[in-house]
Length: 80
Image (cartoon, rainbow, N blue to C red; front, top):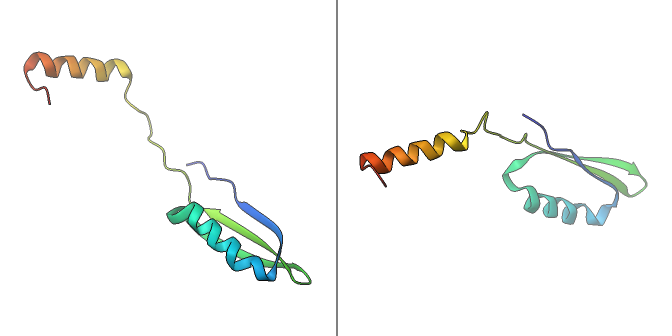
């Protein structure tokens, strides 16, 4: 599964850390995997946010098969 790119906020002042984390949690919600806060120098910090991989279907059904199945359902009287 492909991974989303890590979001990095660079040189965030100390007093803005809670706001930045809250903003990213609302944006990513349940896809959030981890948050790392590292000191960058003086009163500035780097915030790194990693999310879970993107889930994809292995292979969707071809459109022709779906159309044939629908036609068969109509003919056989199993139309939903």
